[in-house]
Length: 319
Image 1 (cartoon, rainbow, N blue to C red):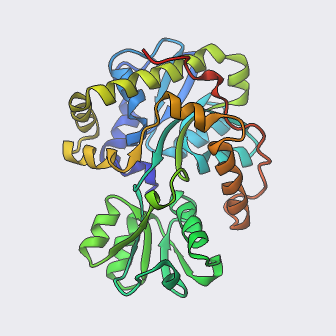
Image 2: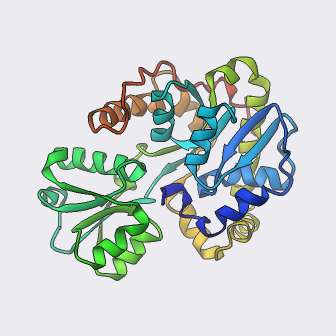
Protein backbone atom coordinates (compact mmCIF):
# COMPACT_ATOMS: atom_id res chain seq x y z
CA UNK A 1 0.00 0.00 0.00
CA UNK A 2 1.42 3.35 -0.97
CA UNK A 3 1.72 5.94 1.79
CA UNK A 4 -0.85 8.29 0.29
CA UNK A 5 -3.48 5.57 0.57
CA UNK A 6 -3.32 5.15 4.34
CA UNK A 7 -5.97 7.72 5.21
CA UNK A 8 -9.17 6.58 3.56
CA UNK A 9 -7.84 3.44 1.87
CA UNK A 10 -10.97 1.58 2.94
CA UNK A 11 -13.22 3.66 0.68
CA UNK A 12 -10.79 4.63 -2.05
CA UNK A 13 -12.21 2.15 -4.52
CA UNK A 14 -15.65 3.61 -3.98
CA UNK A 15 -14.39 7.11 -4.69
CA UNK A 16 -12.80 5.95 -7.90
CA UNK A 17 -15.92 4.21 -9.09
CA UNK A 18 -18.45 6.80 -8.08
CA UNK A 19 -16.49 10.03 -8.42
CA UNK A 20 -16.73 12.98 -6.06
CA UNK A 21 -19.94 14.86 -5.45
CA UNK A 22 -19.94 18.02 -7.48
CA UNK A 23 -16.94 17.07 -9.64
CA UNK A 24 -17.43 17.94 -13.27
CA UNK A 25 -16.67 15.23 -15.83
CA UNK A 26 -15.17 17.81 -18.13
CA UNK A 27 -13.02 20.87 -17.72
CA UNK A 28 -10.07 22.74 -19.12
CA UNK A 29 -7.70 21.29 -16.51
CA UNK A 30 -8.05 17.61 -15.64
CA UNK A 31 -6.50 17.17 -12.21
CA UNK A 32 -5.74 13.79 -10.62
CA UNK A 33 -6.28 13.43 -6.88
CA UNK A 34 -6.52 10.59 -4.36
CA UNK A 35 -7.24 10.29 -0.62
CA UNK A 36 -4.57 11.90 1.59
CA UNK A 37 -4.88 14.40 4.42
CA UNK A 38 -2.69 16.96 2.66
CA UNK A 39 -5.01 17.06 -0.34
CA UNK A 40 -8.13 17.74 1.71
CA UNK A 41 -8.18 21.49 0.88
CA UNK A 42 -9.10 20.61 -2.72
CA UNK A 43 -11.79 18.18 -1.57
CA UNK A 44 -13.17 20.92 0.70
CA UNK A 45 -13.07 23.40 -2.17
CA UNK A 46 -15.13 20.95 -4.17
CA UNK A 47 -17.60 20.52 -1.29
CA UNK A 48 -18.28 24.26 -1.28
CA UNK A 49 -18.27 24.61 -5.10
CA UNK A 50 -15.16 26.79 -5.01
CA UNK A 51 -13.69 24.91 -7.96
CA UNK A 52 -14.57 26.80 -11.15
CA UNK A 53 -15.62 25.00 -14.32
CA UNK A 54 -12.09 25.45 -15.66
CA UNK A 55 -10.90 22.70 -13.27
CA UNK A 56 -12.16 19.11 -13.09
CA UNK A 57 -10.98 16.82 -10.29
CA UNK A 58 -10.35 13.25 -11.45
CA UNK A 59 -10.33 11.05 -8.32
CA UNK A 60 -8.31 7.85 -8.21
CA UNK A 61 -7.38 5.27 -5.60
CA UNK A 62 -3.66 6.07 -5.35
CA UNK A 63 -0.77 8.11 -6.73
CA UNK A 64 -0.21 5.38 -9.31
CA UNK A 65 -3.50 6.29 -10.98
CA UNK A 66 -2.42 9.93 -11.23
CA UNK A 67 1.10 9.12 -12.46
CA UNK A 68 -0.21 6.80 -15.15
CA UNK A 69 -2.87 9.34 -16.12
CA UNK A 70 -0.23 12.05 -16.57
CA UNK A 71 2.03 9.81 -18.65
CA UNK A 72 -0.89 8.68 -20.80
CA UNK A 73 -2.00 12.27 -21.44
CA UNK A 74 -5.32 11.70 -19.66
CA UNK A 75 -4.48 14.26 -16.96
CA UNK A 76 -3.06 17.77 -17.07
CA UNK A 77 -1.95 17.82 -13.45
CA UNK A 78 -2.04 15.87 -10.21
CA UNK A 79 -1.34 15.85 -6.48
CA UNK A 80 1.87 13.88 -5.90
CA UNK A 81 4.80 13.56 -3.54
CA UNK A 82 8.01 15.19 -4.70
CA UNK A 83 9.67 11.84 -5.35
CA UNK A 84 6.67 10.75 -7.44
CA UNK A 85 7.05 13.98 -9.42
CA UNK A 86 10.69 13.07 -10.07
CA UNK A 87 9.69 9.58 -11.21
CA UNK A 88 7.28 11.02 -13.78
CA UNK A 89 9.86 13.57 -14.96
CA UNK A 90 12.47 10.78 -15.35
CA UNK A 91 10.08 9.05 -17.74
CA UNK A 92 10.10 12.04 -20.07
CA UNK A 93 7.19 14.23 -18.94
CA UNK A 94 8.18 17.63 -17.59
CA UNK A 95 6.11 18.83 -14.64
CA UNK A 96 5.86 22.14 -12.80
CA UNK A 97 5.21 22.40 -9.06
CA UNK A 98 2.60 25.16 -8.62
CA UNK A 99 1.86 24.71 -4.90
CA UNK A 100 3.04 22.76 -1.87
CA UNK A 101 0.09 20.97 -0.26
CA UNK A 102 1.85 19.62 2.83
CA UNK A 103 5.19 18.80 4.39
CA UNK A 104 5.61 15.59 6.38
CA UNK A 105 6.28 16.40 10.04
CA UNK A 106 6.12 13.01 11.68
CA UNK A 107 3.90 11.06 9.27
CA UNK A 108 6.82 8.83 8.18
CA UNK A 109 8.38 6.75 10.93
CA UNK A 110 11.30 4.40 11.63
CA UNK A 111 10.15 1.63 13.97
CA UNK A 112 12.87 -0.53 15.54
CA UNK A 113 13.39 -3.31 18.04
CA UNK A 114 14.14 -1.97 21.54
CA UNK A 115 17.79 -3.08 21.33
CA UNK A 116 18.37 -0.60 18.48
CA UNK A 117 18.79 2.60 20.49
CA UNK A 118 20.53 4.82 17.91
CA UNK A 119 20.66 5.14 14.14
CA UNK A 120 24.21 3.83 13.94
CA UNK A 121 22.95 0.56 15.42
CA UNK A 122 21.00 -0.05 12.20
CA UNK A 123 24.22 -1.42 10.67
CA UNK A 124 23.67 -5.05 9.69
CA UNK A 125 19.97 -4.97 10.55
CA UNK A 126 17.07 -6.13 8.39
CA UNK A 127 14.88 -3.13 7.50
CA UNK A 128 11.43 -3.50 5.94
CA UNK A 129 10.96 -0.80 3.31
CA UNK A 130 8.83 -0.19 0.24
CA UNK A 131 11.63 0.84 -2.09
CA UNK A 132 9.40 2.21 -4.84
CA UNK A 133 7.38 4.38 -2.46
CA UNK A 134 8.07 7.30 -0.18
CA UNK A 135 9.20 4.73 2.41
CA UNK A 136 12.24 4.12 0.20
CA UNK A 137 13.07 7.82 0.14
CA UNK A 138 12.73 8.00 3.91
CA UNK A 139 15.21 5.14 4.34
CA UNK A 140 17.77 6.83 2.11
CA UNK A 141 17.57 9.98 4.22
CA UNK A 142 17.79 7.96 7.47
CA UNK A 143 20.96 6.22 6.28
CA UNK A 144 22.38 9.58 5.24
CA UNK A 145 21.76 11.00 8.74
CA UNK A 146 23.18 7.85 10.33
CA UNK A 147 26.35 8.01 8.25
CA UNK A 148 25.62 4.59 6.79
CA UNK A 149 25.68 3.42 3.20
CA UNK A 150 22.95 1.48 1.40
CA UNK A 151 24.95 -1.73 1.72
CA UNK A 152 25.37 -1.36 5.50
CA UNK A 153 21.82 -2.65 6.05
CA UNK A 154 19.72 -5.45 4.62
CA UNK A 155 16.73 -3.97 2.81
CA UNK A 156 13.62 -6.15 2.85
CA UNK A 157 11.47 -4.75 0.05
CA UNK A 158 7.81 -5.12 1.03
CA UNK A 159 4.63 -3.07 0.68
CA UNK A 160 4.20 -1.16 3.93
CA UNK A 161 0.90 -2.94 4.52
CA UNK A 162 2.93 -6.16 4.97
CA UNK A 163 5.52 -4.80 7.42
CA UNK A 164 3.62 -5.71 10.59
CA UNK A 165 3.21 -9.32 9.47
CA UNK A 166 6.91 -9.56 8.65
CA UNK A 167 7.69 -8.07 12.08
CA UNK A 168 5.46 -10.58 13.89
CA UNK A 169 7.21 -13.43 12.05
CA UNK A 170 10.61 -12.16 13.18
CA UNK A 171 11.76 -11.48 9.62
CA UNK A 172 12.79 -7.84 10.14
CA UNK A 173 14.46 -5.75 12.84
CA UNK A 174 13.14 -2.36 11.75
CA UNK A 175 10.48 -0.83 9.51
CA UNK A 176 10.19 2.44 7.63
CA UNK A 177 6.45 2.99 7.60
CA UNK A 178 3.50 5.21 8.49
CA UNK A 179 0.07 4.87 10.07
CA UNK A 180 -1.67 2.59 10.64
CA UNK A 181 1.33 0.24 10.29
CA UNK A 182 3.45 2.19 12.79
CA UNK A 183 0.90 1.72 15.56
CA UNK A 184 0.51 -1.97 14.69
CA UNK A 185 4.27 -2.51 15.04
CA UNK A 186 4.30 -0.50 18.26
CA UNK A 187 1.69 -2.88 19.68
CA UNK A 188 4.10 -5.72 18.82
CA UNK A 189 6.89 -4.16 20.85
CA UNK A 190 8.40 -1.81 18.31
CA UNK A 191 9.85 1.55 19.29
CA UNK A 192 9.70 4.82 17.34
CA UNK A 193 13.34 5.86 16.86
CA UNK A 194 13.09 8.47 14.10
CA UNK A 195 10.45 10.24 12.06
CA UNK A 196 10.12 12.87 9.36
CA UNK A 197 10.05 15.68 11.94
CA UNK A 198 13.77 14.92 12.41
CA UNK A 199 14.44 15.79 8.77
CA UNK A 200 12.25 18.86 8.21
CA UNK A 201 11.34 19.98 4.72
CA UNK A 202 12.35 16.69 3.11
CA UNK A 203 9.09 14.93 2.21
CA UNK A 204 6.71 17.18 0.31
CA UNK A 205 3.28 16.70 -1.23
CA UNK A 206 2.84 19.04 -4.16
CA UNK A 207 0.34 20.12 -6.80
CA UNK A 208 1.87 19.74 -10.24
CA UNK A 209 0.83 20.39 -13.82
CA UNK A 210 2.53 19.48 -17.06
CA UNK A 211 4.87 22.04 -18.55
CA UNK A 212 2.56 22.33 -21.56
CA UNK A 213 -0.44 23.05 -19.34
CA UNK A 214 1.51 25.68 -17.42
CA UNK A 215 2.33 27.43 -20.69
CA UNK A 216 -0.98 27.08 -22.53
CA UNK A 217 -3.56 27.12 -19.77
CA UNK A 218 -2.14 29.33 -17.05
CA UNK A 219 -5.52 30.78 -16.07
CA UNK A 220 -6.92 27.35 -15.18
CA UNK A 221 -3.78 26.55 -13.19
CA UNK A 222 -4.32 29.75 -11.19
CA UNK A 223 -7.95 28.73 -10.63
CA UNK A 224 -6.76 25.38 -9.25
CA UNK A 225 -4.27 26.98 -6.88
CA UNK A 226 -6.78 29.58 -5.67
CA UNK A 227 -9.25 26.78 -4.91
CA UNK A 228 -6.59 24.95 -2.89
CA UNK A 229 -5.97 28.02 -0.72
CA UNK A 230 -9.70 28.62 -0.30
CA UNK A 231 -10.08 25.07 1.01
CA UNK A 232 -7.01 25.46 3.21
CA UNK A 233 -8.40 28.65 4.70
CA UNK A 234 -11.64 26.85 5.59
CA UNK A 235 -9.69 23.97 7.12
CA UNK A 236 -7.69 26.33 9.34
CA UNK A 237 -10.51 28.70 10.31
CA UNK A 238 -13.24 26.09 10.67
CA UNK A 239 -11.33 23.09 11.99
CA UNK A 240 -14.30 21.44 13.70
CA UNK A 241 -16.45 21.51 10.56
CA UNK A 242 -13.53 20.41 8.39
CA UNK A 243 -12.56 17.47 10.61
CA UNK A 244 -16.07 16.08 10.50
CA UNK A 245 -16.33 16.59 6.74
CA UNK A 246 -13.05 14.73 6.23
CA UNK A 247 -14.08 11.97 8.64
CA UNK A 248 -17.40 11.53 6.84
CA UNK A 249 -15.74 11.46 3.41
CA UNK A 250 -13.01 9.03 4.48
CA UNK A 251 -15.23 6.82 6.61
CA UNK A 252 -13.01 7.17 9.69
CA UNK A 253 -13.26 8.65 13.20
CA UNK A 254 -12.73 12.39 13.73
CA UNK A 255 -9.87 11.63 16.15
CA UNK A 256 -8.07 9.79 13.35
CA UNK A 257 -8.36 12.90 11.19
CA UNK A 258 -6.93 15.06 13.98
CA UNK A 259 -4.05 12.60 14.44
CA UNK A 260 -3.30 12.67 10.72
CA UNK A 261 -3.35 16.48 10.68
CA UNK A 262 -0.85 16.52 13.55
CA UNK A 263 1.74 14.71 11.41
CA UNK A 264 1.81 17.21 8.53
CA UNK A 265 2.40 20.92 8.08
CA UNK A 266 0.01 22.64 5.69
CA UNK A 267 1.92 25.61 4.21
CA UNK A 268 0.17 28.95 3.90
CA UNK A 269 0.71 31.40 1.06
CA UNK A 270 3.88 32.92 2.56
CA UNK A 271 5.43 29.48 3.08
CA UNK A 272 4.54 28.50 -0.48
CA UNK A 273 6.25 31.60 -1.82
CA UNK A 274 9.40 30.58 0.03
CA UNK A 275 9.23 26.94 -1.05
CA UNK A 276 8.65 27.69 -4.74
CA UNK A 277 11.22 30.41 -5.32
CA UNK A 278 14.02 29.74 -7.81
CA UNK A 279 16.67 27.51 -6.23
CA UNK A 280 14.44 27.32 -3.15
CA UNK A 281 13.67 24.33 -0.91
CA UNK A 282 11.60 22.44 -3.49
CA UNK A 283 14.21 22.64 -6.24
CA UNK A 284 17.06 21.97 -3.83
CA UNK A 285 15.38 18.89 -2.39
CA UNK A 286 14.40 17.66 -5.86
CA UNK A 287 18.03 17.76 -6.89
CA UNK A 288 19.09 15.86 -3.78
CA UNK A 289 16.34 13.25 -4.20
CA UNK A 290 17.11 12.80 -7.90
CA UNK A 291 20.72 11.95 -7.13
CA UNK A 292 19.74 9.52 -4.38
CA UNK A 293 17.05 7.85 -6.49
CA UNK A 294 19.38 7.45 -9.45
CA UNK A 295 22.13 5.97 -7.29
CA UNK A 296 19.67 3.49 -5.76
CA UNK A 297 18.13 2.47 -9.10
CA UNK A 298 14.73 3.99 -8.25
CA UNK A 299 14.81 5.85 -11.55
CA UNK A 300 16.47 4.71 -14.77
CA UNK A 301 17.97 8.02 -15.81
CA UNK A 302 18.80 11.42 -14.45
CA UNK A 303 15.74 13.60 -15.08
CA UNK A 304 18.00 16.67 -15.53
CA UNK A 305 15.34 18.81 -13.88
CA UNK A 306 15.37 22.46 -14.88
CA UNK A 307 13.21 25.04 -13.10
CA UNK A 308 10.85 22.63 -11.37
CA UNK A 309 8.80 25.09 -9.29
CA UNK A 310 6.98 28.25 -10.30
CA UNK A 311 5.52 30.69 -7.73
CA UNK A 312 3.81 32.81 -10.40
CA UNK A 313 0.64 30.73 -10.16
CA UNK A 314 0.21 31.55 -6.47
CA UNK A 315 -2.46 34.17 -5.68
CA UNK A 316 -1.28 37.63 -4.67
CA UNK A 317 -3.20 37.22 -1.41
CA UNK A 318 -5.70 34.95 0.29
CA UNK A 319 -8.94 36.75 1.28
